[in-house]
Length: 203
Image (cartoon, rainbow, N blue to C red; front, side, top):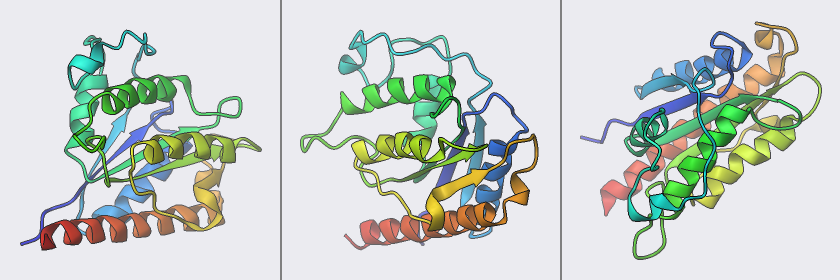
């Protein structure tokens, strides 16, 4: 029997029930309909300190700061086959909470690699979605995807770049092309995760 797959999504918005949350839930609904276990983690409402560049994570697989959710989330990510980051656009980029999180998680992973210099996330599947009002979505998308590419993860594609346009609260669903885009992204993510799993199980 094939391994049961799991996806975790992180909402980088401080608005727990805002447009980014809506988009992530929509993606996870598509994914769970394919029989995949899903979890949505509200990251944007947490207090997350930035990386101190102490390099303490070189000697361990976790961040040396233990008073927030970063290490808990690291475990959740290690247990998952797919990872999604979602963020609204704040001044042409992701939210501060998500950026602090990515900096610390990324350091932990890049400083703890195997003999071939691969991180724990090597060939996991990961993608990001950004929600913008007018501009900055592409910049934010690039920032999110760089996390995945720098860890040698596999990024699924979608038409129109995984962007959703929504200015007012709870209006993301009005962006019909945006909804089609994230639906396709979710479908392609499932396909990739299944392909990676099947490849591993044939070895």
